[in-house]
Amino acid sequence: MIKRLCIVMLLLLSVTFPSLAGSGARVKIAIWRLKPLGLDATTAEKLEILLRAETSRLKGYVLQSRERTQSILARPQNKKLSKCGGETACLCGIGKILKVNKLVTGVIGGLGDDYTFDLKLVDIKSCREERRINEALSGREDLLIGAIRRALYKLIVPRLFVGSMTVEVPVKDAEVLVDDKPVGRTPLPQPISGLRPGSHKLQISKEGFSSFEDTVPVRFQQTTTVKVDLVSSALLGISYEKEGEEKKPEPGPQPLVQPIREKSQITKILAWSSLGLTVAAAIGASLAGWRSNVAENEFQQAVIDQKLDVSYQSVIDRGEKWAMWSNIGWGVAGGAAALTVVLFLVDFVDEEPNNGIQVVPSISEQGAGLVLECPF
Figure (cartoon, one colour):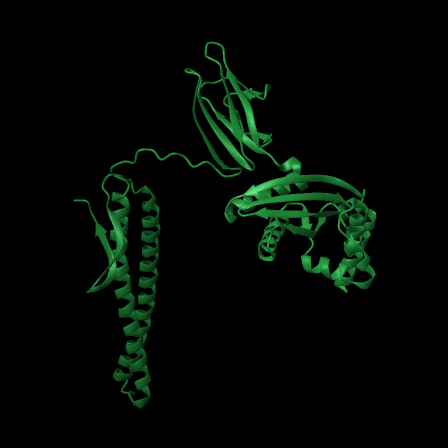
């Protein structure tokens, strides 16, 4: 009943607020018939797998599997479309039958370690060729993946084919221009984003200093960090890192003696826990001792009244049992109390960062336990 009610509510919402129903929709895309040119079947298959893997990673897009595409086009009523030579009209027909929004098709060529991708993107709704690229790729497989990713972004989402730049200048309020357009004054609050990969003209100027001008390369999905000395108008260095990664701070000089203040909190917790164990064990031992005394008094009263018989053996056993637990409890309380004193002492001395006293675990032939490490 509840399940049916939920379904009815969702249907009502989708009818009443259609924008909500489609707000999270993704663009459906299919890759069809990548013709190999000068490639063996194994290499062509490998390149198509790489192309599909990178396409499936595009945000906002969902790639239709090759198996589903082939199974739909293999139906008898769709055999006519399998003869499509790449004309936009028949490609639109294929896209409509596949029920996708975009269709990618083209030619993959290769010679040795050099490859070419001649791909085009067809928009099914408008039935037109939306974009076409011809990319030359070269290199090992790990480099080829990056090249395929760049080609796909150019083809499918060219607005996201961008990089960014960070400008580091040890002078405040210097004006920064990229490609003759002002982007702010130093220190810039954030990287300069939305830059097309390639060379960009960087200009930095401030009254009283020499002006700086140079060409800076920007890479796809990377942040170019440019360090400039405005006093000498010199480029100090260029580095690259993936966009979104936090820059690791450069390590500073390390002190000869490392403070151990961070360990003090752990020692304090152990000390208070040990104190709690001491109190709990003492209370338990006291209760067990009281029960043992009750049994002993009962036995002594029976002796005085001359009522002692075999039935009082259980009283004797009970008294011995409680006496044993009382002794164990006092033993635990005593050990915990000694450990508490040691831990509080270590915690007190540990407030001085240079003494280096620590409680560390130790394992030896005699057994395992805790030992004090002192630098003296």
